[in-house]
View 1 (tube, rainbow, N blue to C red):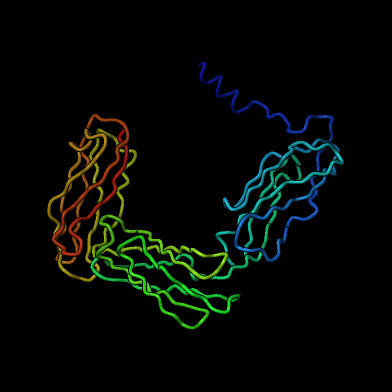
View 2 (view 1 turned 120 degrees about the vertical axis):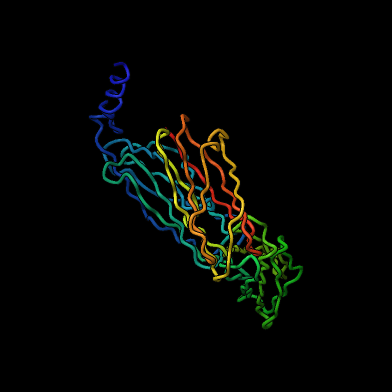
Length: 334
């Protein structure tokens, strides 16, 4: 009965008003909700301010702020403002990760009952000597026994001549080749060797670094994301088995097929599971054994266990390009 009374208090306890009764209501009015920094260099930090006034009849409280990314810092130096009082909110913007036109969202939370959330914007044109397009290159659907390709363009608008040296990759599966187009532009031909991507990583990242003759961008980095397309497709890719009753039997169906239509056989299987006690009650059953596709079930037998489990099911195959299938598995028994 004690628990029921406590819940009642939590649910029905009146929420005290942010503005005390008899003090009137605050009103926030910003001088402007969009700050244009104009053209700024791609270095250091830029400081600016949001200006506002409490035009209401009650105390105004700045309750919090939110920014779109860590490049923008908003730190109010004061929280409470009397009726008629003006205030500022300092903003610091770090443009080093950007090039060209940017627009950053800033949200201000107050106790103004008619304007509890104000959305402001910081815009700028970040000037750079050297542009990299794209800054993040996606190379998708690379097979683990094949190669993939991509192109990154590096160019300048401000400089008379662009020079690039000391090109390096931090991952062995990325082979970059630098090709000069003219005095102001280069192309990076990216070769991805799928067979060198670490096993078990369907998504991998690599960084390319190089030096330029720009005074403000002497060393630059661009990133590549590689997504592997395995020759074997598993559906579903993850086994979610929540809410099972320990007094009942359960089976979950899975299908494995070859993307290129080649033959495949499923061999031994192994289950890595925590807590280990759940392993004794789980079995993998191979059902359909066609040449290009295989069906199997994960069977859960009756048990007296209780709680959550998590791990991986590993199935060996005879496919030369993918000798193992790894299926994450998690669930609960009650």
